Length: 264
Image 1 (cartoon, one colour):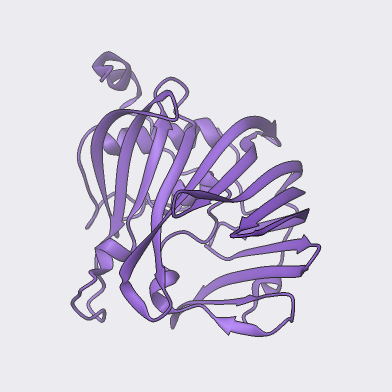
Image 2 (tube, rainbow, N blue to C red):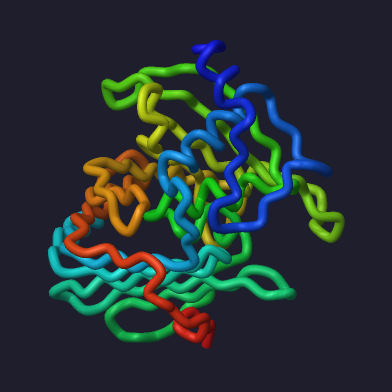
């Protein structure tokens, strides 16, 4: 696995836009942690990123519904995220945030009625459209990082890294386990180390034991304000294409306010 390459980069420690400590409770199988560090370095370099806004065109396919329109996706490095899809049938939105009491989320459809996202569906990845934030938050001490080796995925060679979170003491024992609910799998291009895709599970609102696979594919990376941003993002639900998003504009560090992610 390119041991000579990693010997050269083993001293590289990325803490570009979050204060990251790798001591304490984090466990990682070498070179899994190095892969994530290298990927984050490729994504952000020396750029400190606090927020991102992506706008563009979107196609959404849900059963017999096949609609196109525009989309705005926003996120903060803290984990807050907001997506809004403006389609012919109306606006679909999701908002995620967290506080000292834990994560919270709401979604609404064309009728504008707010629905609570259950706790077990708030533990995977809120900013699924911006892999730099997904990686940076998982370089903290509360995560377990595992190297699952090289694979061929979507016709490309990738490194498969699985990350899950240690269970907090207040979380009841499973099933499902907290580690399972927080598991996120990264597939990093074996040459560039840019994320090719990420995968995780969501679950039925009333059944946390029912896994529903989600895959996010990234391509067409562009340099924006010193960061690498995927301009083509596809979201698959249960192995079927759900969202095809083509970014037309990406704004880094535009000064998004935390109030834009307030849970009503």
